[in-house]
Length: 316
Image 1 (spheres, rainbow, N blue to C red):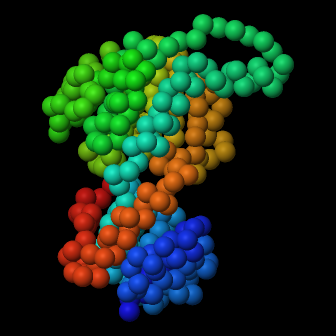
Image 2 (cartoon, rainbow, N blue to C red):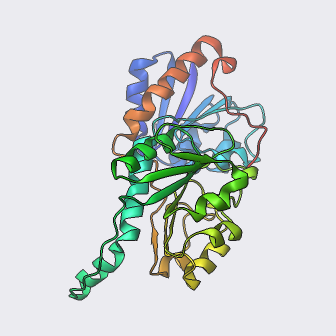
Image 3 (spheres, helix red, strand yellow):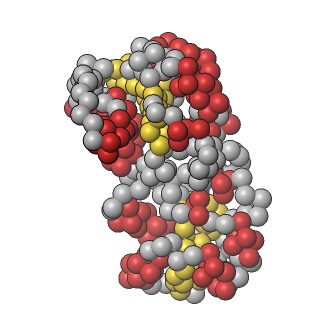
């Protein structure tokens, strides 16, 4: 019976649920890497949120054959030299549309209406009013047109927004009024009141939002990044925000995480920072569980070859 190590703050819950669904494995729950280390050497399967998997734990897993990430992104694992090339890697995806899209809309609304200033006025006892910009009739441009973008397009459409996109892989998508190829990205963003970054991170999308793209944006435009920090040139973004060349930014992801306490983004009045919470939701476990259970079933029946493997040939 293969040993499965579950590293998560809800590891006991996952172990209980998976034991009922896939009893052919021996499940071991650990809520921290320290709890996981004593049982690491004998585990064949590791289930955990990818960013919370330490290299030291992977190095200690002598029998490791498969890592099931509880996240969609596995950037850190692809770059982890301690993870042997022959270890299988799978992820959880396809269900992040609601939570990611709601965060994007929240950041658009909060940035456009200057919610941080309202909170500061509340705490200072001030009563200051200003015109509140609407999302209605505004244009949002989404970079990266996967399933999350489709869900977001539906929400934006409900607000009465015009939705455009940037993608080399799609010429049409539900809820998207116009799609530009990447070669036209500066044209696309020049028309946008909001720019939402949703593209997966890879060498090809590193700094897809660079100084030239930022320079093409309207001075009244707002950037929302809920993809990966490396998709945006943060130095160029800081320059644009400080100079007022764009109106503001809502940022959930950063090149360095956790975000250092002295990071300039934290102190800019036209920036809203959230701690990489885009994928999290109060029902996340219930969303991920069926995928993990199905992959365990496939592994039990057909081994590594039966899994929906991530191509580990492309490093971030």
